[in-house]
Length: 630
Figure 1 (tube, rainbow, N blue to C red):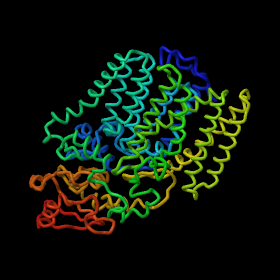
Figure 2: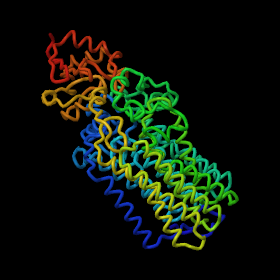
Figure 3: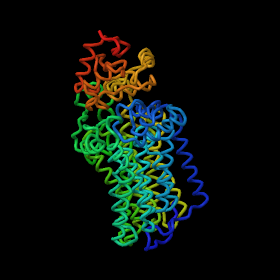
Figure 4: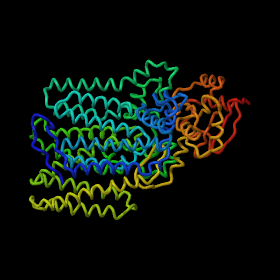
């Protein structure tokens, strides 16, 4: 199934990548076209996806400053709580083609095609084009990839850029190219501007593999790494500097920060505070919201798809297991097998370098996700998907080319057996769905593994047939889950993979300030002529109103409702200046005013509004006309 690469040139990590045959080039075309069709198919079923980011994409399609900073509203009151790279892509698409679900989500799907192509290119330079095809196919059918590359969260852009940095590192390793390593630093800088520190979880692997395996002196390796660091600082730092030199009074507030500082957001709310569990938004099934709406989501392990069960088992169980866990055991085993197989190879050995790159990425990123303590969405594991697929394919190739030896046959058999049995177990956790599939996978795995283990070393056709059967068997589970994911509409902040398992979205949405359809309210907002048609607590509620009405809505307190903007005095001044027409109070899932996010930090605004202006109830919403005092 795999073509062995030419003999290793000990002077280089990759002296001359295996040339692809006509059939292998055709296979690449099929892979990329198939990925595009799969990810673009019926993509608008997801509608506005995560309305929080959709509101910002709409704002960016209308206003250049909103696009630059990633503002939630076109009037630039506050940003989303992430850097703006993903918003740049969706906002520019909206400016070019008009804002819609398609203009927002199609670029996300195209990022999937680009990520698969880069993974293929990287692995092909390490282990040959057929290994690259296997890696690309494994990534394309990973359920979390099928989920998040059709969604509008920033994870898709971040992972594409992380994969770009890995590809540039592979190129840098070929001939100790400082230029290619600098490009890896540039890609990492923009990955940081996509999702901050999570985009840098590949950095330890990049730095370590270059320091170990680059075919040059230690001095040059260190200098090249310093050059890459400088490239990273430039590509990421310009935006940080921009937020510092741009007068704070004339730009949107940096949501999620306590002091309107981008770096406070990076190291606080969205950084070490989240890893260490000191996040002000940490909640789970035992908290009031979790108790109120978490029961319908019990299959997810915790409220809203968030997994609070930290430890080494997190990636293998709960929702993580369905999203990324299918090939993780194989990837870990493949990593070990390559290190053992190449234990006596030269320092610059390309296969070991590739395993260190993708295996190091998997271990470093995986450990952080496994032990993160606060608000861990399972879809965060998208950052692992290229690493899992890459190291699994490299290991499978290594065992295939060594199948003439006992070690190779045992290793290849073990990879197949472990992966097939694991898929059987994962599917057993949802045994009511396609029950025959798990047994088909198990039977196919047993046949393929047995044929590989028992076939004579010279019986090539038997080995090829067994390998093909084995690959089909071990990829059947994630493929089925990925296809099921494509057929389900995903909305809101906690998308999950697989077949539809509960009708819990309405309760979850109302808990997060997302109102039910309210045409009267939307018409009212469209008639407002002020800078902001309305103000409401929380960015999700504001974004929903923006999307429905096409107007700018002030999100008091940002995403969590506790950002210190606006103050009561600032809000009174905006109302007096005729900047805001309505104040909106959403009713929660119990029909009571309030809901999430908590309004306690801005209760003074609500108290002043309710004491000063009369309200009208429209559906599940109380509307205060700020132009008509009592």
